[in-house]
Length: 357
Length: 165
Image (cartoon, rainbow over all chains, first blue to last red; front, top):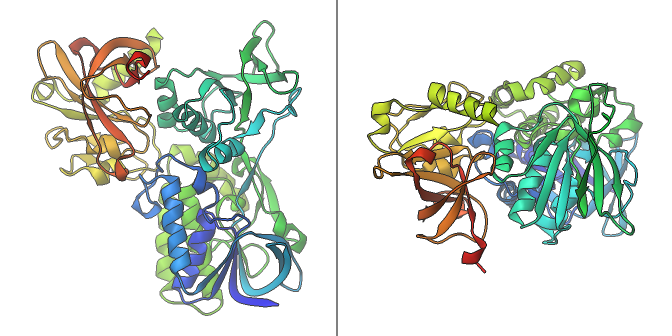
C-alpha cells in the first residue's frame, strides 16, 4: 500500500496547480495522471490564452503546460505518477489505480479530484461513420501527433472550442467548409469568431446537422436551418461535402470517481451537467474530498488554475499546513471572482449558485 | 453585409478611432475588442501606458496622446484583435499592421491579397515589413501598404499561391 498526504487526481491546469499549491504549503503530494505527459488539454492548445498574468495570459496552452509541468517535476514534495488511471475510490479511503499494467493501492489524508470534462456527443443519422470526430480527438491527432484528420472539415458548434479548432485546422492547411451552430447566436468569444471570419469561413447560426453520408466513411453532411423549437425548417436543406465532421457541442464534468462515495451532485446545465456541490474551499459534501477545474463545472483554463490553487491550499490547510492560509485563499478567491465577472461568464455564475453549499 | 459594415464603421467612429487631427499625426493602435472578456495583455504589453482597463473584464481604451503605434499590442493580444494604423504613410496609401499566425510567411515586398473582416478580397497589397516581438516570435506582426480608402477595411492577408509554388 502506497501512502501520501494529499493525492491529486488529474494533471491538467487544475490538478498541477493544486499539487503545486499544496506542496508550497509543505504537504507531501502524489499527482496521478492517466496520460504519458502532464498538461491535460493544455498540450493541444496552440492558441494564446486569455486572463491576466497570474493565469499566464498571452502564453499558448502548450507553453503553459510545459511551464507548470516543469514546476511540478522540480518540486521535491510532489511525486508524479504518469500512465496512471484511477480505477476507484473506496469507503475506507483506499484509492486504486493502474500504472504501467500494474494494479496499485494508495491511501491519502486528503484528495483533490481534478479529472476535467468529457465531450458531449450528438445524435444524427450515420454518426458512427468513420470521419465523425470529437473536437478533442481532432486536436490530439493534429496538434499532438502531427496527423491531419482529413482535408475538408465541417464543424458542429460555434462555442470557443469549435472556433479554436477551426482556426487550428486552417493553420494546419485544412479547409474548413463551415461552422454550424444550433443556437441563434455564436457562443464563443467574439475575438475567436472574428479570427475565423477574417479567414472567410462561413458560420451558420440556427443550423443543425440532419445526417452524415458516405459509403465507407464520411463524404458529406446534410444540414438545415432550425426554428426555435429545434425542428428543421422545410426547404433549408444544404449539402456540404466533407471528409471530417468535427463535433464541438460542449463538455460535461467528469466526476464519476466520487459518485460511489455518495457525494451530493446536482444537474446544472450551465456547468455542463452533473456537478458536485461544494463549499467555498472547494470541499465536496464528503469531508476530505475536494474538486477543482472542469470536473467541478465546465469553465475556462484560467479559472481551473485558480480553483486548483484554492483546492490545493485548502486540502493542505485541513491537515495542518496553515501558512498564511486565509490570505492566500482570499487572493485566489478574489482573482477567480474577477475572472467570472464578465458577461461571458453569466451562465457560469448562475450555475455556481446552484452548487454552492 | 451592408448592415454589418455600417455597424463596424459606426463602432470605429464612435468608440475606437482617434480624432481627425491625431490620425494625421502618425501611427495609432486600434483594439477591435468589443466584448467584455477576462483578458489584459494589451495593457500589460503597452510600454507607454496608453491602454487602460478598469477591470480585467473591461474592453480596452486607448489614450491616443500616449500611444506611439509601437505594435507591441498587436503581438501580445491573445484574441488577435489589435491592429496599428498609419494614415500618414503617403497621400495615396496607408499602413495597416496585423497579427499573422500562418505559414508560409510572405516576404517583404511581396504582393499579397488584402482581405476584409469577413475574409473577402479587397485589393492586392504589398508587404512592407514583418516583425516579431514577444511569444518567441510565433505571432508575426505584418505591416502592409494599402490604399488610403481601404485602411479601415483590410484586416487580414492571404498569400498568393503563384509566389509560393
